[in-house]
Image (cartoon, rainbow, N blue to C red; front, side):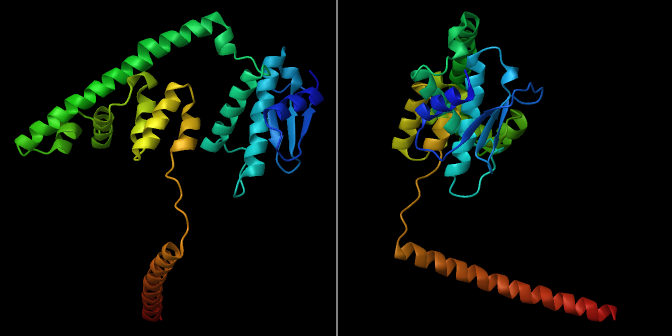
Length: 266
């Protein structure tokens, strides 16, 4: 596979992107398989690092994700910043590449990986989800007992269980919301943070359908931005003016203190 063919495959994944260039360095690198140069809009691949096309195309997709991240950011972005947005872009590209036969998922193809994945998921991630959800129910019982005895629940979990109170309340919330343990505890925590019921259910469903944590966080993790209105802007203006007034008063006081201290030294 040459560099022109790689670019063609990348454009099949997302064609509406700024112009970019794919360059094979013709070298072997012990540090990285590829890199993206934002100023030149250039994806560089150290093609002598690879023995086959699968790992090479993965690297190309990774750097292509940086190109999309950099050229579509609302504010200036660092191409080296592996943010949640970057991983969301990359994972969506990889799923699309698998669907179109551009990239072959080695984790599904290799029998050893497939068997290991099933074992990790079923015997550890799912079981841990069930255990943590059950723990949430037990902690709720402990809170009821604390209320009955007029004892501090926070003190109980902090000092007796050696469990941070915030973690305890998160587990209790997971139990109360009845989040499916099959998605795993870490993903259950992500879902529990979403306040809106409908968005929370859709996020849980997205995990169940196989979306990655970064994809779910990018789609559901933030509260939708409210539409700007004159009333909201005027309210914000008043708040900013009040803060500015307070800061101005404080600045005057600090300047006066500095003058007094300097006068005392003279």
